[in-house]
Length: 330
Image (cartoon, rainbow, N blue to C red):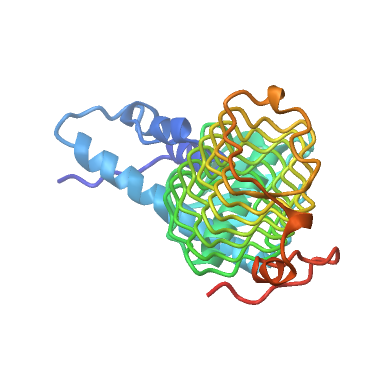
């Protein structure tokens, strides 16, 4: 098979896709039309495509190594320099004319090409690469989802200690987080749709706008968590603990909340339409107007102040307002 070289302009397309991390950009980058604009030969089509994918993953590896040397110092002024990519040097530097952009320069000898990418997207990609590296998850060519969230779909993080981590805007759809410790983590606007979250610790974490639709979070702990405007619809939260959690504006319609513990939880403007609350532990003023929640199953509710002292102590304890780290869930 003849040897094929990638020009700086073609490589620039690949690196630009790496910088944005979007699925649509990657598909465009590995297209023979865009990578090798003037070499269209059906005999080498498959080889060229495979080579481009190899280059793309190589760039991700170089970016990850370069970021590791930065030691979490990623920001608007971040510069990265990658060498030996098909004989080209690649640099990511802040734009000299607009701080909202990062300039990519691909240079080979005296010839170079430049292209600007959004700096916020670049930073998010850097964070995604660092996150996967730190968690020991293999790098995935799809770095960001089409919604711009960090792609951790379908990964297995069971038994991991992710307490106090910054995991904002992460897509955990379909992932496995069995007995994962997310105590005090920032999970604002993260997605957990259809994820396995049984026996997971979310206590004192920030989950504003997080989505748990269809997730299995049975036996999990949300004590003291901030769940304002979260989506728990169609999720399984049976036997879960929500003591002292803020559930203001949460959508819990059609959720399974069987035997869940809601002592001292804030239920302001919660949607409990058709939710299963059978045998849940609640405060005496819970559901002052049941008519606002049509279809809610509230059979055999257990009111906190009527619990025998011995039974109350057997339930999962309410965390103190200081939200100190609880014992390991393992």
